[in-house]
Image (cartoon, rainbow, N blue to C red):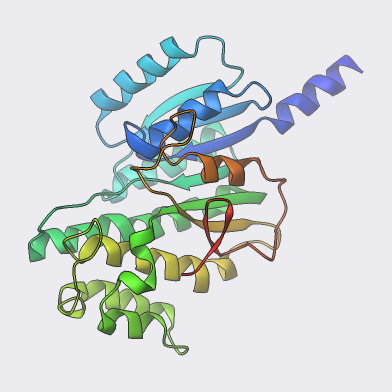
Length: 274
């Protein structure tokens, strides 16, 4: 009986991979997971810089010495194919399977030039998509993918040209990628609004939202889930966690596909308009 219970506890300790954990939302999610006493997780956090990652790991372990969850660090550069291959091989060798992927890694520029616009799309869209698909073989059959998005990714924030492409009912994945490759030309009619004064960051999130809504679900197993998660870095709840509430809500949902919210944009624990 004792061995059986121990085996069950080991089996139910879910593994969470979260990218870009050194500040903001990613750090807040990890801190909340470490502080929870009701659930235990095996958390794998990544950063591009080993120095930053190791310092963050040390700080978190010191801050939450009594956490029932475990925390590991692994360096990952999403824009480096070898780094992605190495990470995937490490997951396969050390874990075999994992339960949740939280794609939090992103970049943004203020008043970006054309080269920075392309870099934003490469990092926030292409690299996230390729990394996700590289890890899908190791996602447990009831696993979850959370794509961290933003209200700026809503279609209402995009210029008319990109908005028309993303709302075209004949849009396929090939043309979504073509739009991403031509983002400089396709966002010439972007009108700055709200907190963004440039087009590429909102566009990168809109592209990612479209991928979640239209294309990733078909690549998942029947009981796997995916969500675009609308979080705002400037928003804090009463406990002070930056944008962590909705991601934590989705993490803690039972592990089954909820057809009414699967592949939807979720913000404030509810379905939002893409």
